[in-house]
Length: 260
Image (cartoon, helix red, strand yellow):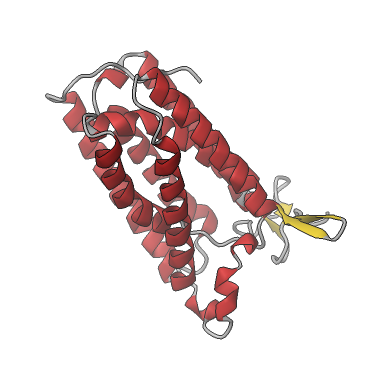
């Protein structure tokens, strides 16, 4: 079986599927989030600027974290650090860079909207975009697979020997299921509990991400892998706190629109 392709040629031009897929995911998440904001009667005029800054900061943080945790691969080839089309984005690096900026910009552009309500509106769109991004992004990157496997579902990935667990497809399915869970929570009225949807997403995504890293991705207990597991568990713990606070004496607000 041939490896999962990483690019295609159109005349003299080369298109890298990894970046192309992430661009599609970003567009879907942006459009979906903008529609949810509009249906929640929030001003959508500054959202393009808001989303643009978050995308740029997230990419910078994700790439910086990947390079830092794989420094041995880049120390003698510094220009390779700029070759983002080859893959190599660390999720928690992107979160670490984009989250603080997002909080500041949310206060600036939507000063009258509580941050928890704003997050509840955006998070399902982010999860949906993440699900699409896992399938259309890492699935087509260099060395995109997980552990070696001899099972029928294994795939051959460029730059990796043998059949590999198709982790991007698995994570895409996981995130897609989480998106459905969040929508169901909204439809059952939990969206009225400010911060519940965000906390639920943090809890489930953090726990699943830690398990994925532990069971499917982490190779030989590299420090980067351990760091991801710890960060994911911290995110899940913070999500549990947010869920409990939203249920015990939490403030209620009009529910975000649950329609897709």
